[in-house]
Image (cartoon, rainbow, N blue to C red; front, side, top):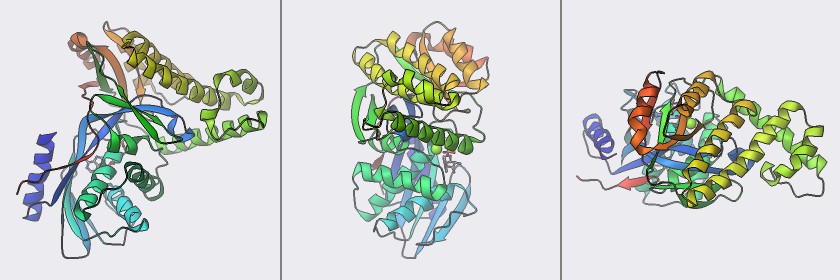
Length: 385
Ligand code: ADP
Ligand code: MG
């Protein structure tokens, strides 16, 4: 962590021949369970991880925003107030989106220069994009000497990604990057945005992230299709139960499934069954973590994967075979795809003393194991001049 911050700060000094005023560091995340439940107002259980995006920034006298990407080795800029969603440099869209939303909410955006770098694998389901947005926003708060409310900050970054970048994500990634707590997952209620820390470190066990190596393709259209199928399911549930108050799918419980099966199209029914049972699995996982019951947590992870594979249909052969390999490796309690699916990563809970054996088994499949630590949310670092 500190090494990454030092690397980006040093790069800043070299590129801009001056020292930064602020350095922000925002984590990526792994979602332990609760997949495709955020945008239907349900429960999710993500944890911030010790992989980050760092932004080092300094105010300038001009009215230009200019940034250097350490990882892409290119510079992008725009005049303050002129944010172009078609900007030729793709990573700059996330920056411009946050600045544009800051201005829309009445904040002043000064001219500034910055450097950005990170160590979150891109497109692996660990949410490098939300970390980038949150690192940019927090650096700006530092430059302006303000501190926004955490939920407002997360919602601002979500709007940047939804409305400016055009990715219709839920609120989970931005909220955990902002509010994560060391050693804890956060149970997020995506209707009320209330969060509850849950100790996720089970003695003798570790959380692992396995990057399948498969990058997501076609994810936007598939993702938007799942969202629309969930909306169809909601409409059916409201028609079937006109006397129940159904704000979103989270208000439909599994006792309604048999009746819904009679009236739903098969595909829409399976989407619905995933969302309803997944919300229940999140709450059961929280309960099992509190009881320190690793075997139950593991079983729920496998069930989640099966539901995502068969009912929600967002898995792929690489993710399935990674989970399959893990299920045959001693010491693994459970595993599931994490993130939107169609590629990316698997999260697993395993006995710590079996990690070398697991790493060997996984290496043979071409995937890569990361042992992760659960970290805090975004913060500003002290700048030493
Ligand atoms: P993820 O699942 O990792 O969030 P996305 O496709 O949503 O994948 O976001 C990835 C995008 O975020 C990249 O294409 C890039 O524009 C930006 N990004 C991620 N990491 C960095 C980085 N280290 N430096 C600059 N931009 C980054
Ligand atoms: Mg993303």
